[in-house]
Length: 253
Image (cartoon, rainbow, N blue to C red; front, side, top):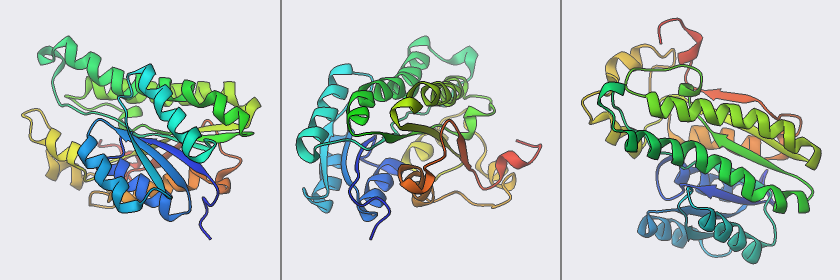
């Protein structure tokens, strides 16, 4: 028996990286999953590997209200309800404030923060009708602190952290719990691509600052997401769950 047996989850950014890990892990825990992304070939391949009984893939730009409505409709049509939302989709780009175009800042904020807000808004009705649910918003340790070159990313992740607390206050009356997850360094394609830019954080210095001196594997974050999605976390809402190898425990970051 999986800890998510009988639950239906909607996951964003599920075609690769942490999102793909979340999709696979929640399915392994018994959930039926609808997941979206803009990387349609990769998303379709993930879905094909898991099968229609377990999951469905939809094209989903999280900045689009229409795409949110379509993703919710797919989940309702395929599986009849939504118990869990994992707001995972995100983008990252290193650039100093002086060098960053406004369009890049806006794009990062729209995907990471506005996309999360739209997702919470989109599932209130279905979750209320189902008698409650769990929303898991993927923030970052950059939702607690800042690093040079990450003004847009950090602003968006602070926003996710704040919106999570507001949503917990507003939605608790409907049986909907809302929590945020704050990963540290996770070895994904998004991080690898961003690290190739001139303003990236030096990887050696970063690892030396971590008590558990390695990058996380995506599934290590997925296990935390599954806990928050499950009834095991039934009295947790409005809270921050950090999985950073201990980065924030020290003074040097």
